[in-house]
Image (spheres, rainbow, N blue to C red):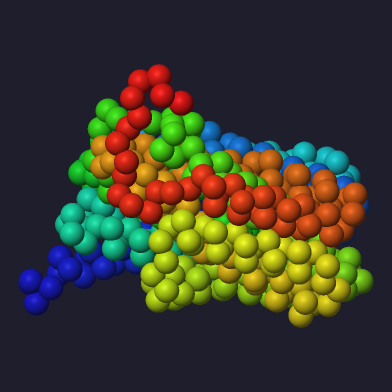
Length: 443
């Protein structure tokens, strides 16, 4: 029995770390899926709802590189505890503030200001866990198995985007006790907080201390529609070098611009979907929870189908993945914005997500192939920041356009994506291994 023990220890540790990543993504997207209904129930402006997650995403983008660097110099276990602790405290405070708003103790404006404070905690501290989790897994695996292990770990975010919206409608609660305050739509936040507390205790008791054998990378903000692209895996397995490239380096400029347009189109349409379901179906916010969860599950499932099934089967090159993905996503966005039934919205959103599921890995792989091995970590960091930055302004832009005219964010996104198809067709030509760096002074 003695030779088996180390392997069991590795498996248990990986399962715990996988659960950490899954819980962070599921808890965040569960709350996102019910927030449109919460906003409508409280009488808050739709744009205020979008601003809540824009603030959280901005702080995540700023804090994630800081925690990734700190994870390399300090204890991984401490960083995981900080991340899970921030997630848990944030969700509990969000649930508390929302419950007070639902029961009329706080007004709509005060509720959302307090809610933003809770999300600030999440954006600032929640991003500490993923880089440390990556580093622990990388340090416990051989170089040959490292990419596979980190890819499996990253898939937890994709699974979380399905799990969160799927279970959120069933977490809406009544009263805490007979005659007590109504929890209602704040239930998913409290449930996610309870799960976070259990995971925090498990990490404290079960996760061993690790030496700094490998480094972790910043992970893009876990949001509705924000499927993992694999860039953080590339950064985590890349060796640290002094080579650094800019966003407008001639080798990657086309990929960066295409990725930025694609990311904003996805963030715009994903954040507005809850409002679209409420208004198209003419139902109350609470009645819209299950159909909204169904639509989001269809979208996340389509993206995972593309990334886990169709892309390996079709074996398309990065440029082809981007071109096909952008075109399919444009068609899906237009179909979603003009649909008037739940089946139409679901099929349109699934089609759009399928397109994004093709384009995101193409964007990541194409950016990576455009440069040499000495710049892989730098490019992966740029890709991750592009993916995260899209969820800073994208949700607010999408909901702002939605307030003007319901189909507008989807038709606008479709137009942007079609323009990106033309731009990508003319600009992207990096399917071969990296080209030499341009000489100094070359544009």
